[in-house]
Image (cartoon, rainbow, N blue to C red; front, side, top):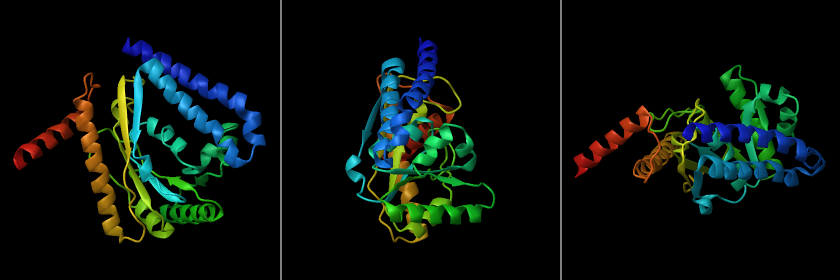
Length: 266
């Protein structure tokens, strides 16, 4: 049943994407940008609805009260394609940094550029970072935007050792806006590089914002400490659920470490 439901959801997920892109195209491209956001946000919510009804996976996203007004950086853990589509409906005017090559894809690339996303050429890291900061500053000066950036850069398995990149520190220092960490363990239910979709409830939390103006080391320590502590708690809760998902080795190892630490404190 798990394989059948997963296969069905994956098929319907992409059909839903293609159909909505076709159906909504006239409205999307003829509408002002702020109204056109309805289309991708509606697609995201419909995808989450399908995920629930077909795969049996619900969402429990809390902490919306921690999202500031105006411009800020949203810094989620990156474990799955789920976290690429689940959070932006909560934002007023999301902003993504993406590979320049994606903008070259017919139709899909046009959708991206309609929303004034920031394409980056992956050449020199220092030049790319400067270009990203400059483009983001320009966007935030025009309108309040919410930059979504994954501090670890690439998808990692739940419970894996944190590997935060320094790029977010420079972006934080240059932009001077709050950073909202986001904790979740979606990779347990929508694993990377696998087609299986496990039933259950994906819990995610928008954590209290880290204010601008902190020193780089202090900011990095807070970002890692607060995000990882919340992820550990969500991992424990998921493992104790009535019908827990299959845990990857990284999650099993992390749970053992947390259990040992708890026994030591006791």
